[in-house]
Length: 335
Ligand code: KG4
Ligand code: ZN
Image 1 (cartoon, rainbow, N blue to C red):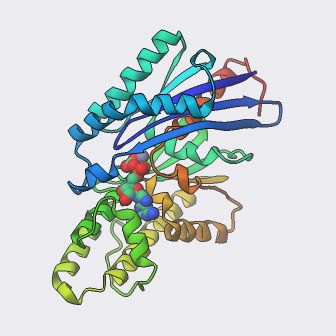
Image 2 (tube, protein in one colour; image 1 turned 90 degrees about the vertical axis):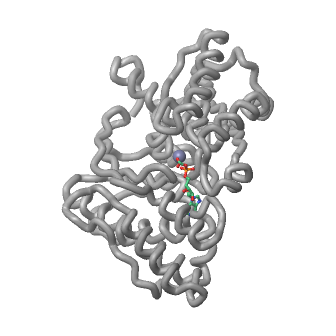
Image 3 (tube, rainbow, N blue to C red; image 1 turned 120 degrees about the vertical axis):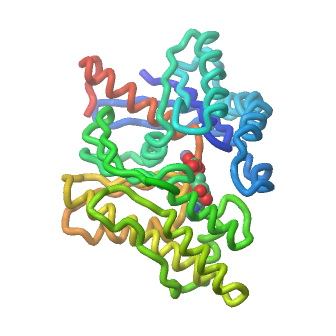
């Protein structure tokens, strides 16, 4: 038996539809991304230095029909073969989420198939399971670093997640996006900061914000310190060194909070997710830190193409949610 899941992601500025084929035997899960079609609005949103919700919704409406067509054409399946329709329910820009929901509900109604509402941030975590034969060993510590969120989550099973901490103000990606704009570059800032940092050294001192006893984060002080530095240095500023210093500082803050979580919780697997996971410097820094610890912790990181928003990760989350439900009802025999 296999399942074909059609997944829709429209929470922010990417219109994405994926079709996944999923099956299993006694020993493992098998996953095939038949298509994952994403139209990004970056070029349009760049003019405004960030995502304008009304424009995002307008572009989703313009693009979604072609994205759907292309997803079916690449997957080479008929619509009758779809078993489930998954979509991003929350969090995200409300008018953008509503578009995905309406499309999902319409497809589910016409195809007479069940709907699976999914959580966007959990989707980012499940992106790390798309291209591997390995499974997480619970308990899992997950760090989501995206444009809108920064969260540490603790999972004891696929259906049991606890929020350990989150940002009280800016997200990591948001901080990079805003500093890139202050430096005179465009949105999204993350890839620009990463590129600049390649030829920079972490010579500027930036504050390690919110190194307290909690697992919450705060990055607005770091952003303000970077802004003041940019204003003070003026034309003397070395943007490459600032970018490197920023990445170094962010990496140390993240490690501090991961360390806090690992000292309080027993963890077998560490999972990273979210758009900022595309940053190779940060990923390598965090990987090195986890590997050097005395506990043996498996590390799961999505491949580059599944770090930023995409529907395949939503399909992956939907699959594991279904599997857990069936397992709970003893209708499925699998690890
Ligand atoms: O997960 P995502 O696609 O959207 C949200 O759910 O927010 O994340 C977008 C964020 C943006 O802030 C963007 O600057 C950041 O991911 N990003 C990166 C890189 N590529 C994208 N940050 C650092 N380095 C990158 N290479
Ligand atoms: Zn996202």
